[in-house]
Length: 272
Image (cartoon, rainbow, N blue to C red):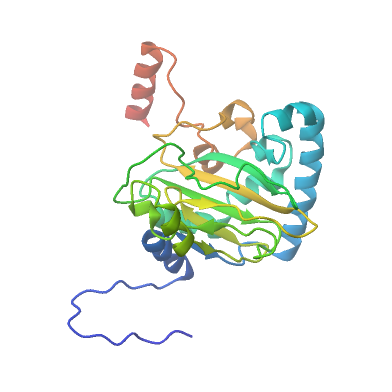
């Protein structure tokens, strides 16, 4: 139980009335936080089983040799498009959405949902410092994109839990090698939790020194200004989705294919 912070000469102080507000405050200030207990144990087990089913089908469909050549063998793109409903429910997790609404002002969409595997005793594509808006070197006054990394396994120091560079979402460039080494923080988190990051915070996966893979489902949520990594609306049946799901998955933000289509979209908004 937290106690009041004593102070003097302070005219204003933020208030935090819920765990979602606490997580959002940490993300704004430090660039990262852990949203604990977002799923039950039975939900984690169902997601874990579905993850393995999709992974097997994915490798069969695209070929291990091709995936390895592209450095994609330890990634499953667009998880929710592979026939397992649990991944859509995960993207619409009530605890996650409550946190996102505090972080991203106005509308936001699911830009991507990918399965991430940190293999034992092996390098992988996420094991380098990066932002989840790669190649971008700008800062903004509020989050434009949020990364929500769902832990299918416990994230530990031994199995390569994610490292972050605190508050680096407020700096345009990555710090020097010495600065990164001195200030990096590794995030331990239990299975069923989301590690929530401002997408502009620098982070990297650690080295998995155990005998088992460390698995996660990565989500990136963005304002609709950003184009989706893979157009989700092209792979899902709108008739089977709720209005909230269609909005979150980008069905309501298509790119007009012509001037006439653009004008029609404006007319539709004006009459709705």
